[in-house]
Image (cartoon, rainbow, N blue to C red):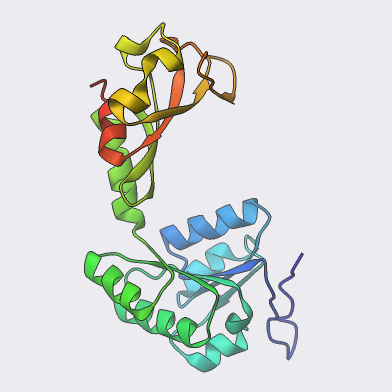
Amino acid sequence: MVRLRGFGAGETLAAEADSVAVIGLGRFGSALALELMDSGTEVLGVDTSEELVQGMNGRLTHVVRADSTQEDTLRELSIPDFDRVVVAIGSNLEASILTASLLLDFAVPQIWAKAVTDAHGAILSRLGVHNVVYPEKDMGRRIAHRVRGNLQDFVELGDDFAAVRTRPPSYLVGKTVAEAKTRDNLGVTITAIKRPGGGWHHCTTDSVINGDDVLLVTGPTRKAERFASGL
């Protein structure tokens, strides 16, 4: 496994593949960095706030107070050596854009950047950022889907395609997956079933849909939403 090394006296940080730099340690950046750490990924956290840096000290592999809009600073942190860098800066759009531009100049293979508005995201996309994410908007949409009905979870997988976790509509209870004909009639596919007290398992055409099951359903977003609403 690649290691984050350095930060001893007179040393700079050295990084190779399989480690991640997270620039911006606000709510989104810190939550992402800690989740990466929990999954076994080594993380370099960077922020201009001494308070945020101190708050993450000892929780990340390395955490540094630094200005990510300065090319020399990023080079000292060996940011060009990272395969994956996340720009989680949200409150300072200029800093977000300048940082993303430098990462593109470094030819970092995978750049993820947080956008706080559609205009911000459009600029990042035009620059060439590989992955632009809208955490506040995406979470709001996800919660809204859950509030609206029987849907337990909602994840968009791409343009107009989603996976939903939901209780089965009453008109399908007691039918097999083959009898339900959800793909033909509703445009969605039941891919897995979770029984009460059990785990998930891939369904077959003979799997019977029970009223207390939880279904994992995939399909075009609107059709998946309609299925979860019981229509």
